Amino acid sequence: MKIMTYINEENLKILKDDIGEYRFNHSLEVAKEAETLANIYGVDKDLAKLAATFHDCGKWEDRDRAYKFIKLNGLKYSDEEMDNFQLLHAPFGADIARLKYGIDNREVLNAIKYHTTMIKDATMLEKIIYVADATEHTRKYEGVKELRELSYIDIDKAILKSLDETIISLTKHNKYIGTTTVDARNYFLKITKSNN
Ligand code: DGI
Ligand code: FE
Ligand code: FE
Image (cartoon, rainbow, N blue to C red; front, side, top):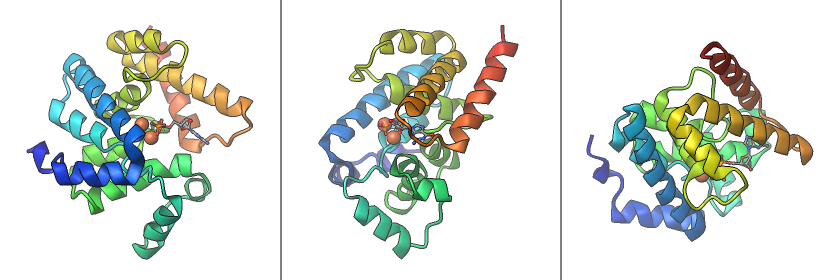
């Protein structure tokens, strides 16, 4: 697959207009980190770069426009996704990647779809996009360096740590925890235990 068909000047301009300069720059950083992880874990670097570049393509700054687009195009999401833009932007992004940028690679679309909540039985590409999103080099939260280093050694343990911290933080702030997030966390708990 020629990824430059998708990662071209015109599409990058559309992406930047939709998600804003800050999140656009974050996406380019995720692409760099995803490439590093793809090298370590033997995943196709082009697929990783493509998925990473567009992983937040559904995080439109103009949310009203996003909900209008969904209605106009008859796109369907679960109730919890429709009620929570933070959850919605990932599956919405997978649809935008397909409809607006013409990306038809199923693995790439699924990596975009599950980049916020993760998913049980995740593919290595899905894992890489999830982790690179959390550990790209402009992320500044406490423990990010340790998480990045752990991701180079044991990506499943890094994902479990990140999911645990997300769930703790959501709970502390009285926020809704997605069912996919909970399932993913329990799955990574199980597979990291049996790996010991
Ligand atoms: O889009 P980004 O900010 O780059 O990163 P992301 O897509 O991983 O989103 C991270 C945010 O998503 C973070 O603030 C926690 C939130 N999040 C992750 N899982 C859930 C969630 N929010 C809710 N409400 N429920 C979840 O299950
Ligand atoms: Fe995101
Ligand atoms: Fe992101």
